[in-house]
Image (tube, rainbow, N blue to C red; front, side, top):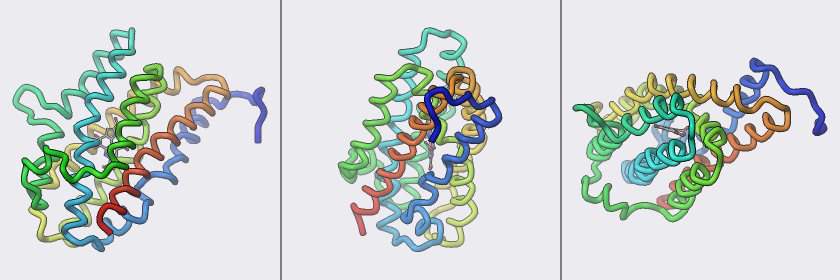
Length: 232
Ligand SMILES: O=C(O)c1cc(C(=O)O)c2c(n1)C(=O)C(=O)c1cc(C(=O)O)[nH]c1-2
């Protein structure tokens, strides 16, 4: 244990501490490991896709809450791109539509997906906790909570590499969402990390940033728990 007067980490060490939290990412959740190993039934894949849809449609509301709390025009100008990425703009259908196409590729009718009839209560609670955190926290803390995206490119790449062989019944066109997110996540993380490294400078603040990242890891982990339990 350290004391309140422990010296601050420099930026390189602080970033390394943030990245080390990747050990608790939902990529290591037993349900995700099964998904990645081709061990899920089609109806279990559908349960995951239908439930994760609630995360997808909530992310722009989370990002709008960050913008609402942010007095810095430069940050807002960059952050608004995230909303457009998911909601679509200028002929780009956006991430939510791409997820709906994944839904169709796994056999979920669009009306069923959009109705949220398959949404498990634990997933709703976890996602709502993330949106509420962004509403109630400073914009820097909310931005810090988005940094699980540091670990997302790997999880998307795993799906692209493994699903075609494990789940040949899923039309490969449905995987476009995962493909599109890799470069977007890398861009998002670059900005989110800059804000976090700039804002959390004392050791006490850096410890707080690690706690915030753990909260977000817990959101994603709880979603997996609830999805697994919804359709064992
Ligand atoms: O498929 C995944 O495992 C996964 C995880 C995460 C994440 O780590 O929060 C995001 C995404 N995907 C994603 O597609 C996405 O657009 C996204 C936005 C955010 C965020 O916190 O702002 N996380 C994530």
